[in-house]
Length: 478
Ligand code: 4AD
Ligand code: MG
Image 1: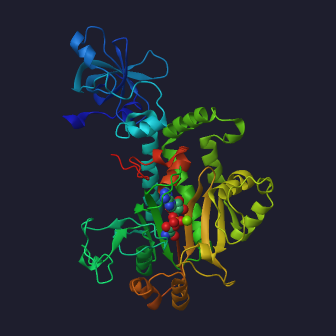
Image 2: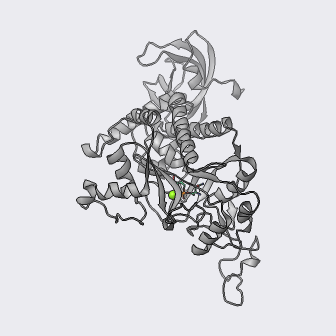
Image 3: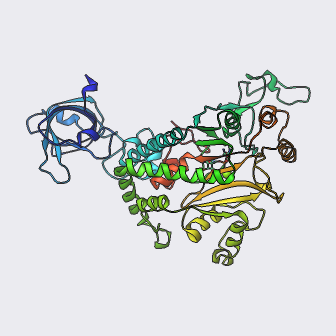
């Protein structure tokens, strides 16, 4: 019985010809005891359901309140009202689930994003989050489509690992040892040999190392899954649990890597522009309204859709880290001491520097290559200058770093040397080094922060608003 219903997105494409239909959804608003705006999450556009006077008794009328769920049987008729081609004239209306109007937190008015974060379990029912999460879905689908078309193998890498892929020590420990009074060894340290896995384990920070193993057999693979970082960053771009897409390709150098990353980003943006037009137009209007509250110089120069089309139709700028430092040192912002962090060859680029480069200087996405080896991970290929590595970061307007990647060090001796220098346990990663022992090849890969990509496409300024249930320091509700 239930699967006979028509989804509202589908129904809205019909010509009204008095078809008999069943629709279901949640009440957005109810006006004049007659007009119900019904939404089932398939689109932001509500269906107007008309309950002619007399159809419902007093008791039923009371039960049709914002948030209640309904099953409506009726006829599709041309709508005399403005802004819609059709509506459904109800013959029966059944309340499937009541919603106490006094207690339901979502009122038919605008709520702040901060407030909605506190009721993340209900925010899916708002127009903004409806649009955001349909776009998020579309981008995820487009990612699989892109790689599938190119013959990449989707590889599921483990969530629980014993290694720190990035060597940054920002891991969540996984243990079943008792917190009070854990077993200790003779040196007084916790004895992880008695732990569940017989060793110390953590949640993965990246699937890259395992991805590289698979690329050494399938040539081209990608991962797409949750990753975890215990970094205490309370910013609009950091989550403790985020989704990452990590392609890894054998027989690729840094140039091939950049080309693939640029094509990939353009593909998924193009997919959303084509398939999520309504949602993106809604989000564009939302952003424009939000930005109208800001002082002129803080507003975006382009609207959301214009920005996405611009990115699609223009080449990303490609510069080296050294060039980036020179641009920053010569910038008016630097001269006027506007940067909080030091600009100096050898220091990592901070978000303010990245944003200056993309938003003020180039006004488009920028790929920065050739970072100093000391600020990057152990697995990156050392360039002939001995000082820099074949790394690449892609910086996006409004976001900063959206992709981090590199050509990998395929030479066993050089890799071991870097690992020792950086205190990475060579013995524990014997399996990783085996790829360099048996048929090593030049290879490369990158990681796209999926939520940052969703932010870029939806124009949402806070990363907490593009993942259903954000995990951030001091926050794991829902
Ligand atoms: O630059 P990262 O740390 O690179 C890696 O993890 C590599 N193993 C990727 C690879 O080469 N296969 O992270 C990659 C991307 C960043 O550019 C950023 O977009 C995102 O992941 N990211 C985060 N997103 C949200 N919250 C965080 N805490 C993030 N940390 C990184
Ligand atoms: Mg990075």
